[in-house]
Amino acid sequence: MKNTANFYEQVYELVKLVPKGRVTTYGAVAKSLGMSGSSRMVGTAMKHAHDPSLNVPAHRVVNRTGLLTGKHHYQTPTEMQELLEKEGIIVIDDQVQDFERKFWNPLVEL
Image (cartoon, rainbow, N blue to C red; front, side, top):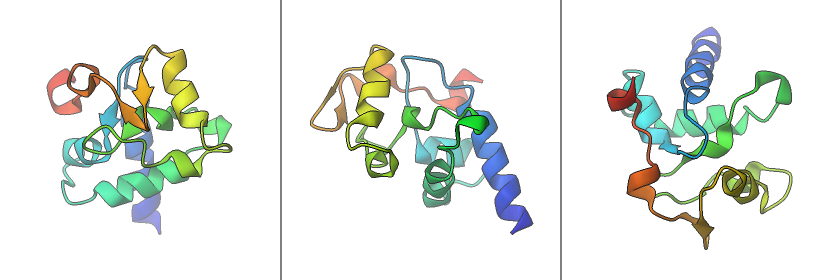
């Protein structure tokens, strides 16, 4: 359990670096932490990141094609989209528009 908690902390610290108006992916986060096969673990970490005291912008993490696959973990079905739209990201049918331009790759950006 300690290793999982440490992994979650690393994920949270990295996700806190994603700028407003940009998104990253579960896989990009995992890869940048040296755990390229652990995108599902990143997803689980995001599922547990909704505690406001953690201050993790989990809404900025989407799947590899820009889909809002984590939206069902929010209080309402539209909350993830609303948070992204407040940051200027256009979402249509749960899909981030202009995904390639909005994608923040921690391996390149950091």
